[in-house]
Structure formats: C-alpha cells, structure tokens
Amino acid sequence: MSDRVFEGLDPEVRNRTKTMLMYFVVFAVTMLFAGFTSAYIVSNMGQYWVHVPAPSMFWVSNVMIALSSATLWWATKAIGSGQTNMGYTAMAATLVLGIGFTITQAEGWRQLTDLGMGWDTSETEQGTAFRWNNLAALYEGSAEYGVDYDFRYDGQPLLHDAARGELYASDDALMVQPITTKVLQSSNSGGGYIWALVLTHILHLVFGLIYLVVNGIRVFTGVIHQGDTVRLKALGIYWHFLGLLWIYLFAFLFILH
Image (cartoon, rainbow, N blue to C red; front, side):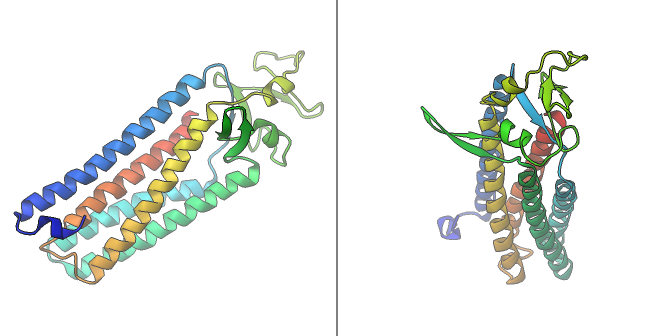
C-alpha cells in the first residue's frame, strides 16, 4: 500500500493499518488451507492413496525456512535498534536463505515428478480434473513399490507381489485376491484438494519471495530504517507464516498422510 494514503495521519495509524492488513492476508490464507484440508479428509474415506517418503530437498527446505525466519527477526530487531550494519548482514542472510528455500522447493517437486508423482490433469464430463497423482501412471512407471512409494487404504499399506505384479489388501496375508485393477482404476477424487493446497503454497511462496526481495532493496537503500520498520515487520508476519504453512503442508503430505 502506498504511503500517500497515510499522508497527514498519525504514524501509529499507518503502522497499525499495515500490520492489520497483513494479518488479514494471513487469516484468509489460513481459512483457504483449512477448507481444502477439510474437504480432503472427507473425500479420503474409502479411497486408495499414495504414500511417498519426503524428498531429501524438502528436509533441506525445512532448515532453510527456519533459519530465514530467524535472520529476518534478527534484521528487524537490529534495524529497529539502530544497529544498521548488523541489520544489513541479517537481511543479506535472509535473502540468501529465502532464495535457497525457493531453489530447494523447486528441486523437491522435481524429485517427486521424477518418481511419477505430482499433479495430473485429465478430462471428464464435467471438464478438466486435477489430481495430486495418477495411481496407474505411478505404478507402471520406474519407481519401485515399497521403496519409493506405496498405496494405502485407511492408512494401511497394500501388499505387493513383485513377481506377479499384483496388489492385495493389507489383511490378505496369503495374497489370494488381487485388487490391482480396482486400485489403479480408482479415481482418487480427493487428490484435487491436495493439488489445490500445493498450488496455493507455491503462489504464496512466489509472492513471499518477491516481497522479501523488494523489502531487501528497501533496507539496503535506506527506505527502511530505524524510524520506519513497519514494512519489515509486515514482511516478518508474512514470511514466518509462510514457514509455518510449509511445515504444516510437509507434515500433512509426508508424515500424516
């Protein structure tokens, strides 16, 4: 928001308004995630789902986002207390870590794509359907079942006979009744909600990175200084929230899912 809007007003009004606007953005994104998560949980009942270990680069992402939040907090505190050089150092570290987080995110999604995961589109009578994955494409690809991924029903992994190339229910210990065709023809309709969650996260990250770079420039050009750190505080609210949202999505996709 341009500062011209606040000309003639008490600086405290400007600061509170910018802060509240950022909290509103955070609240809106939270509600969006909550809606998609709830819809996914409902649609998950009676469905076959893919479980895949988290790509190694996503673990690196976790470290990157945590460190970048710490350095951004450090930068805000340093600049606000007049320690300009320390603020510059902390902000430079935040920019490097923020870019690193973005790179590791891209590499993590690439690792999933190499396995045959990721989002898939297909045409239906209602239009284009988006899915978190395509069970048949994954099963018929190069990824190894039981190592790179597995299919689950009600949280239990399906049994797999590699020699016969068949899948069996988790309680079919003798592997008598194959259910491969049934599994691979599963519509996995709830995967669209996962797709929406992932897309929302990516958009959130893109806007966050732009916001981080813009405010980094403002810090180094003196626009953000000891007497005016509200933009940096608003960025902190957004960036810390981005980190929390990513950790939630990471846990939801690779630990709780």
